[in-house]
Amino acid sequence: KRAKEMLAQKRPRIMALQEMRLGHKTKGSGAMAIAQAKARGWILEMGRPMVMMKIARKTGQKWKRNETRTLKQGGVAIMARKEIGLIRMGRLSGPARMLYESRRWARAAIPYNLSRRRDGLLHVASLYCPAGSGAEARSRREWLLELSIQDGNEKKGQPFLICADGNVDPDKSQAIREAIESGEWFDLGRTFAGQEGPSPTFNADENWDRCDWEGATRPDFVLGNREAKVAVQEVETVKGLGTKGHLPIRVLLKLGNTKRQEKQIEVPRPYDWENVW
Image 1 (cartoon, rainbow, N blue to C red):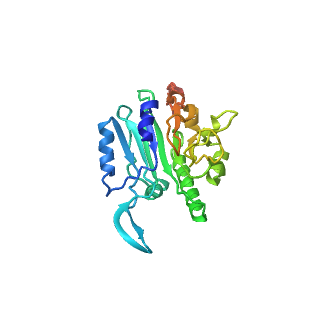
Image 2 (cartoon, one colour; image 1 turned 60 degrees about the vertical axis):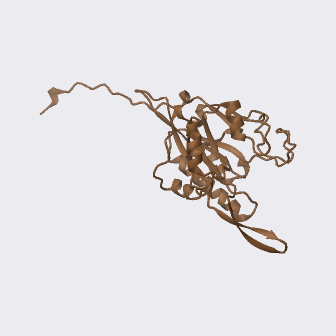
Image 3 (cartoon, rainbow, N blue to C red; image 1 turned 120 degrees about the vertical axis):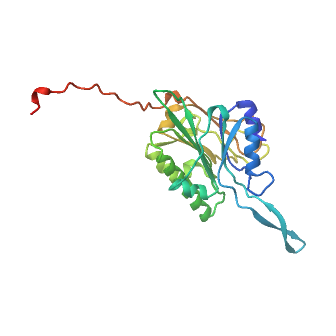
């Protein structure tokens, strides 16, 4: 529902999605989602499907195994309009392979400004970190964030965005703090927020006004590398959709502002025949 409203109001060209609850054995499976997206003019690149879990239902004083299968929150994807194209992940190795195996990450590349003089790729990753305040959940969050940043570093020289439901405020993540201190990565919501600071993105209270920080947090954020930051024109937490829970983040990029990677042509020099022996 939130994605449908976002499409109608903001008309995005690329979307990074989390908590899709899609699995390879459900009726609303990945294959069906891909087909539905294609019919509506979108290309969908999904992460590895979530594991199907059997659940137990309490009846009286006993737990009874229920044959119904369900999905925990999860499932990530990248969507892009057909006309701008989308390059799928393909064969993965290194950090990208571990991220894919986590079932909480997806990445795709979007070609831009193709011409004889210049071509480029915008890389967009969608990441959903586990929730929880325990040591295991915190450790896994940091591990996934660190891997995502390492994956982005392997695309050095190309704009890279990490769009995350990180289940942690980026100011409180050691992996994000170290990446920002390196000068190569930026918390775009904070970088482009101005004096008022970044906006909250989540509150469990159904009566939340989408602005007040009381009871609210900022678990949703977009990290960009140096090349992506140059291209960013605006970052907005979308508050007018009338939905509860997480608020979407809109990032407007002008890819013409990214760093040019042009070949330098050297003029040939005359051969010095007099000094040939």
